[in-house]
Picture 1 (tube, rainbow, N blue to C red):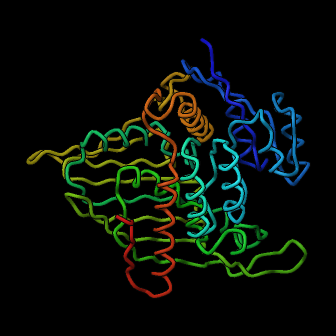
Picture 2: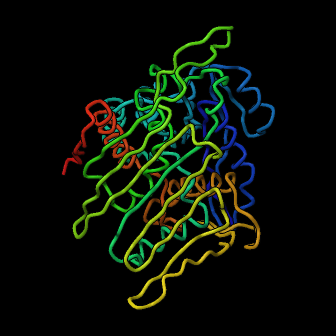
Picture 3: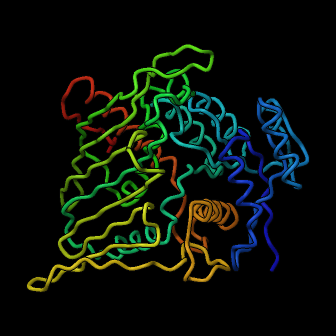
Length: 386
């Protein structure tokens, strides 16, 4: 099979940049795909971060300290950009204007004005494919649940809950980092850092919150600064967003939550959907299990728990009896992005795309309204511009 090789540049050679490199190295894990990413150039302000790529990734032949030099590299046709939020506005615009396809990290701008600038640049370059990183819907259990929604199995919606929780910030001795500062992470705090993961699937279904009442928490007031002192933690640790969704034919509550301090959780992503004809739950805390309850009037109400097979959007060499994990979901997400680059949205081998700029913009609307709700203590309406 002849494969379309997609030449990538990586801007930001930290943890997630390395995860992309690992996914590209594992491409042989995928079956029957006629496209493949190849990382040919990297960029980071830290030479040590780039050194890892130069040492571990044989396809990398060029490294740059200035991302504009990478964008001028004619060999680079697509970019993965994983940098702190305050850099998104300028970098993403420059990447798009350079005509490079982009998979960027959430939240696609430190705030709503930055996000609007990114979308304006994209409107001027409609041939550039831009998507947002969101890997959790590619877990087999989540992927199956998404299929059930598309098939209309749930009947009338009763309520929806979605969240992303971890507990790495529970330790007050953990030194401060850029995610704890408004200048680099933004006022959204944990919402901007985690919220696109939570909203990707609901927004894909058209479940746009009509309003939100937010409860935002700052739990750890200060952290070590790494120099023997302490500094204030400026951003929100946890967020609970109670929303009301109105669609053309129904109305239902939706509870969204993003938590950096959720004791006992390590990157737990979950979604729960309750409907009059079916209910279902999936959580990465128990990644092999999918819970469902099919209901017909007069019949028993019984939850069923099944171990879902190792089967997601793209077929792999792994047998169905084995476990699916985070690195597998990253690989599936990258396959979806490369599939769209190679074949276009309408020609993809499967239909579920990575998170779109429109969905990222929707998340900003929810986060901005949540900040206002926290300030005023009121339920705030969300304007979707339609």
